[in-house]
Image (cartoon, rainbow, N blue to C red):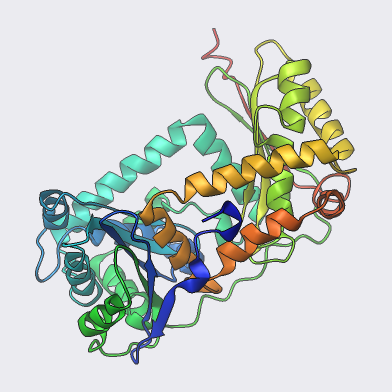
Length: 424
């Protein structure tokens, strides 16, 4: 298989069950392993402000006891079978995955069914996990990058749920009782709001196995997604966030970008790689290697279901004035709006292609990408976007650069500057 062919996500066999559950099977016989992902179309985006963090809280509770599996038993069983598992909550999605040998993978289906229909939510376990999450929040707030990122996102998304922390806050967590968790689970964790992906050393018979395991669950119509106003971009001017922490100056610049499925998304991703995705990229070469204003610098495309963002992260060289470094960064961004040279574009394309392939090397990574695509778009979206990468020209990237970079757009500039007391 060539890189240009992607991983064949579009060839996945997909079946919609009568109760609303979408099941997909992606065959990959290279190793005797099978990964399953159950993704629920729910995240921080679907929380009311007063219940901030409930989606992530519930993710924790999904490992803390069901009718058939007691607290911690899911992890113990996974380890006993030589497998692995994990989960994550984002602003758009909550997903759970397992990887087992091809002879044991159906155990994952038994666990996921029980978590979907028979979650216990024991009060003692709830309180224990509340304390764990409070420690997570404290850790984020004490980390200079995480704390800066949280404040910049709040300013950039301007009241939109994307600007709220996935973890919630101590105040919102204090108000989440068992009744709220149970109600959230009942409303959002039904088969009609979920996608099940089985990927790896399996064939089409896995569709029948999944239907046999989940098909008799009663349908549960998911509620509509929470209506929220789009983050305002009208009249958006540079906004500034400054905090004092640590001994290193850190800069975070966030600019508006299109959503993940937009026709220009592949070009924006390539733009980010050209600007700051590798050691030889435009901004790294100019501001790190040549002018030595920053110790390191990176540019990322935050692709999400609703409008995304370009994020530039950099650490200042000690002794360099923040004002000077910021001014030079903005000058370089404005110059970059003229687009890349052909050789720069080809280097960035090669880096992005390699990153995509390495990022999908493991079967559970392929399963997660397919689950994300099926949850909001179509199974073949990742392959179509990879295919588009090979057809992009310097003109295509120049067009998105002229629309996504200053002076055409403005965003949020965030600084985390050394604490005067800590620097003494």
